[in-house]
Structure formats: structure tokens, C-alpha cells
Length: 235
Image: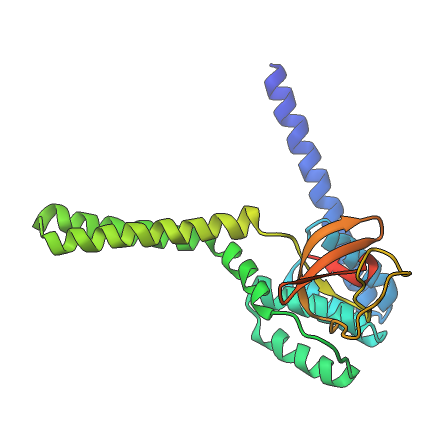
């Protein structure tokens, strides 16, 4: 009996939570349609941080940020759209914004973003590996061909390597962030430390190595630097 009541109240809580989220989305869309972009942006940002967002919301956040000349944040939302939804138009829009804003500096390795693409498709990749391996195993079981057995062993080794990479990208890889505003590189977590002459381009994706107070240590081209945490937004 207690278990039934627990299920009932849990279901009621989830329904209420879903209703609140839908009301927030409806309210933010109304504000956006009326041109009240700042107010809509506050609600969209709250939804984003709670994980309740869509490609449309990310595009709207990018538009709002661009409208108020926050080009770094606009690039963050476009990068998130491109990575999570495979949207090529978002990538093209990033380059337009880079030219429009005149942002200059050292560009990080864009390949870091592809790890997120791999993470999103992990299930499909694993199922494909299992399917192909099973087909080859079935073929060997019927034919008893030694060449097929060698291919099967090679495929199993490849499976192990790919699955190891998936485990790394999903669970072991350092956190990643996008630079959202102009900043300098520092040798240590202090404004009193010597800053480097090169600077990261807003919109660059970087690894976060460590966090300390208002600072985070990032990695670029196998070198570590410190930058203020408020100049980045973590994925």
C-alpha cells in the first residue's frame, strides 16, 4: 500500500514539474514574440540550465545574445546547437558572427566538439558493432571458415578499441567549455600574474583541467593557462 502511494505522489510531482516547465516555455515564447527579448532570455536561460531546451530555444538564445552584442554567448549557443543537433547552419552562422564581431585570437581545437557528437550517438554505435559482430560470428558458425575467424578476431579487437574510446569520451574526458567573452591567458589564478600575449577567441572550445575560486585552468595546444571562469560557459 505504501508503495502504491509513493508511486502516486511521484507521478503527481513529475506531472506538476512538467506543467511548470511547459508554462515557462509558453511564457518565454510569448515574451519573445512581443519583442521582450531580455525577459524571454532570462526564462530561456533558466530552462537551459535545467536541461529543458530544444534546438529552437538555443537558436533564440543565440539571436537574443547577438542582438545585445554578446557575440561570445551567441557563439556558445550556436556551437551547442551544432554539436547536439548536428546543425550545419549553426556552424555557418558561427563564422558569420566571427567576421561580424571582429573577434581575434588563438582558436582552440574544434575537434573537441565532436566528442559530444559521439556521446549522443553512443547507443547507435554500440548496437551497430554488436549487429556486425553477430553477423560475422553467425557466418563463421555456419561456414567454419578460418579466414572468417581471423576477421572476427580483428573485429572484436576493433570493438574493444572503439568501446574504450566511447567510455573515455562519456565518463573520463575532462569537462569542456566555450569562451564567451574576451579574456587573456594567465600563468596562475591571479590577475597579478603575468598574462600571455596570445588570447583565446570567443567561441573556442577548450578542456577544463581544474577550477579554483573564480578561475579555471584550460588546455590549449597541450599548454595549460588560467582564465576567469566568468569568461567561459561549460557544456
